Structures are given as structure tokens and as C-alpha cells.
Length: 461
Image (cartoon, rainbow, N blue to C red; front, top):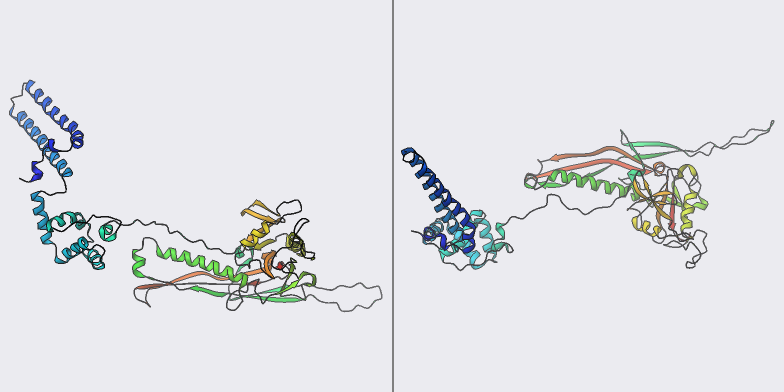
């Protein structure tokens, strides 16, 4: 008889006995009460009734025995019984030599690279892991503690938990599309005629000679739809086995990358196979004092702060600044009123977040900040001199002679054209085992009305 079968209830630990005693007592009480009830009945000697009673008692006794054995097995010290050792040795004999080498490698050299490889190959099945301790006894091998901390000491047996939602690094872009004029076109180019006005009139008396007067100047601006694309590839296995929808994730990533790239080009693009940005160096900038919409068409007018790379002091009590008339926040006021009233009605400020931080520090003569936040249809928006302020992360930071702040009606000043929205084609043929995704979009943009936007230059003139 095995050691397991000889375990008695009284041999169990005190805590186990205390937990099991109420159950066993209830069984004994049931047997006793039921036996007494049968004795008092007239049919106590009935053969059928007696057989039922005997079977019930036998079942209960069997349950008690099984319960004792289960508890004993739960509390035995490591399974060193004679029969169990024979069983383990039988299992050990059935395992392959490679399995045994893997196990011995783990036991004797758990940090060995060869051991790690063998364990990966032969102990992937979790059922093996349950037998490790017993197999060590069967083979007579010195044991080492199992742990989930070290991969080769049992960590392989514990599956990691992966978060289904990927954390992302947030990228910044500029809200150019939100403010500019966006138009869908059916061809590769949009041509817009621009009337610069300038019609001349004259007074004449009754008998005077009527001379020819100047006619308005008409210009034509062209906007081309350029192509933006991405061509990533993903292994077919990853698409099949990844924990998340790789294809949808990739489409979202490309969509965001497209938005960031086009926003950058709308600000600083050179127009060579891409949009022409409203701040590109090829676009002229003329001081507001000498600017004329007709003669300087193709250029933006600007106001200077009076200090290179900074705002000038704006009110008495600050450090003495240059003698230029535009001092500190005064330069911002000059920018506002250099813009014609018809454009001011829908005007917005545009600057980078660091420039906005510098502007927020400006105060008036009473020490009040010049920026006040206001609740609008777009949420909480900083209002500078009564006009909304937007963060254009692609605009230059404040520096010597930098054009770091723009103000105007962007819907009039800048045109965006969309020919084709984002398309994607899936290619599983050209490179076996890989899936290529061809994303493309056709869009373009450029300045439209040079009288509708003004710039602030951080320079002396």
C-alpha cells in the first residue's frame, strides 16, 4: 500500500483537521439519524429499504475515504511516496534524451545560453513544468528554486500580459487647414484671378478734356495638387498574429503623418513638388511703412518690434529700450491696425507655443496681461487684443530678424487645394511574405491674397 493511502485524518495538520471536522461530523450525524429513523418504521425489515440504506451508507463512507485521500494528497510534503516515485521514474523514462538534456541544463546551469535554447525547444508545453520538481527527484539531480523572475528558472512558464491599447508619443502640428480656404478640385491645378483694384478716377469741368485713367490690375494665382505618399511594409505573419489590428493602426499613423507633413509645408514649403508655404523665404517681406498692395504684390507687409530677437520694453518702469516707436506690446497693436478693417473681422493670430508663452508675459501699464482666455465655439482660446490665437508649431521661434508672429484673415490669405483624399492600395504580390501598403494623397497650397496677412518681425527695422 502506498504512503498516500495510509494517511489518516488524525495525521493531518491541525488547521486542516479543524476545517474538515464540521463536514465529517455532519456526515456522521446524517448516518446516525437516518439509521434511527429506519428502525422505527414498520418496514424496517423490508429488503428493498434495507438495500437502499446500505448503499447510501456505503456511498457516504466512500465519499469520506475519497475526501481523506484528497486532503492528504494536498498536504503531503512534496510527493515523495513510493508509488509516486515509480510513476515519476516511468514518466522520466518516456521523455526523450533531448528533454532530459534540457532539464539537466536548467538544473545545473540555468544561465547558460544552450540551456535556454533547449528549454525553449523542449519545455514549451506547460505540462512539463508541473513535473520538473518530481523529475529532479527521479533523476537524482540537485534542485534549484523555480522563479518567474529569471526566464530560465521558470519565467518561461508565465505568459506576460500585454496592454491592448498602445501608448503614443503625441506629435504637434499646425491648424492651417482649420483657418485657410480649402477647396476640392477636379483637375491638377486651380487658377484664381485676383483683382488688385487700383481703378483711377478723375474730376472734370464742363468743357474739360477727358484723359485715360488707370485700369485695375488683374493677376492670376495658380495652385497645384502635389502628391504625398507613404509606402510601408509589414510581414504577413505580423498581420496575422499581432495582438491588435495592425492595418488600422498603420492607416491611423500614416493619416497623422500626412497631416503633420502637409501642415509643415503650408507654413514653410518651397513649392518644388510640394505646397508653397506662406513663410517661405521666396516670398518677400516689406516694411509696412513702404508697402503697397499693387507694387509689392507677392510680399507680406511686416511691423518690426524695434529690438533684435525680442520685444522692446512697453511701459515706464521697464528697462530702457531702443528709441523705435514700436515698443513691446505696442508692436502687436501696430500689426492689428496695419491690417485693413475688412480683413480684421475674421483675423487670427498664429505663432508657436513658445512664442505664445513669451506674448503671454507681456503686460500693459497697469500690470495686466495682454492675453485673456475666452470660451469660444472652438473651446478655451487665448485672445490677444480681442482676436483668437492659434499655435502653429511650424512657425519659427523668436530670434534675430525672425518672422515669428502672423496676423490676418487666413481664409483670404492662403489657399489649399485637395485633388484626391488619402487612398491606400494593398500589395501582397511583389514581395512574398510581406504586405506593402501604398498610401497617397494629392494636395497643394500657396498664398492667395497678400494684403490679407501681416507679420511681426523681431528686429530693429
